[in-house]
Amino acid sequence: NEEKKHGSQDLLDLDPVPQTPVFDITDTRTEADSATLTVTPVGLQERRGSNVSLTLDMCTPGCTEPYGYGAQLSPRDQSAQEYLRQGTHVLTPAQLHSRAMDDQALQAEFYETPMNFVDPKEYNYPGLVRKNRYKTILPSEHTTHTADVLRVQGYDDEEQAYIATQGPTVNTVGDFWRMVWQERCPIIVMITNLEEKNEKCAEYWPEDAVTHEGIEITVVSVTQEDDYSLRVFTLKHDREERSLRQYWYTSWPDQKTPDKAPPLLELVQEVERAREEAPPSSGPTIVHCSAGIGRTGCFIATSILCKQLRTEGVVDILRTTCQLRLDRGGMIQTCEQYQFVHHVLSLYEKQLSHTSEE
Image (cartoon, rainbow, N blue to C red; front, side):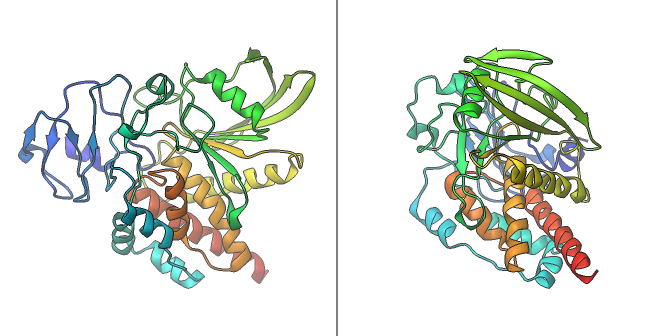
């Protein structure tokens, strides 16, 4: 039964490990029978669907999540960097549709692509554990925020089109709102429930109004759509007033199979429309889930790739994944997510060609 539970595990998020003694699972088979695992209590090595191991240091405070599925927690070695800088696989529409259905080819491509996680030992930031939800997912060296945040370029090297970040914790709500103001963000895309078996994200917005870091945050309206709710806020600080939209996508966490591509595609398109209507002085769109790499990576990649498909008539999902991981390790976190992005793009291409036929 335990194995069945793993199989139907949430496609778009991974469960955190509980704060209990950890074990070294040394079996490397794809669907290991849990009864035959050789277990020794040393650090956690998880190999699921890949022979690449993931070691998590669990000695210090802070919660950790297992980033298995081929994830690799190691210093950013040269060969990984080189692979990520050169990785490319351009797909025409016909190739995209057949590729989306080819699970084996996508698995092979996904597991060959380095995760590029940062080694926690490389960091000595004060208050790191207090500010970061998962201490194995750390801010990049070139971020200006202590909490786990990364700026991501958009399509065609559009400067800092997105900010990928963890879901705020109770300790980082103030930091989060300061960032929203400082970066002039017009949109927040939230792709997680507040709780999924345990806490995934603090409820960082008010029911009516609240002040954080001298920024007055007031809820103007709440609209419930089929797959997300839209909150419109007014932010006031030093006599300046701005509008902010939060798209809270709640239907993603429960998806167990990649047949629910339409809601994600609709959200990407809705956010693009809102982005175009935002003032020209607006900064990046904030995207977050819980750790800010899995579902967040899927959303940002899909958004970039939709633009590429419209503009060039081809997509390079591998290249976009590699570019995202160069900046932020672990983006598009599981093989299932990688397949899912292909499904969404395949759906989008069919929509595009259907529209042009009309």
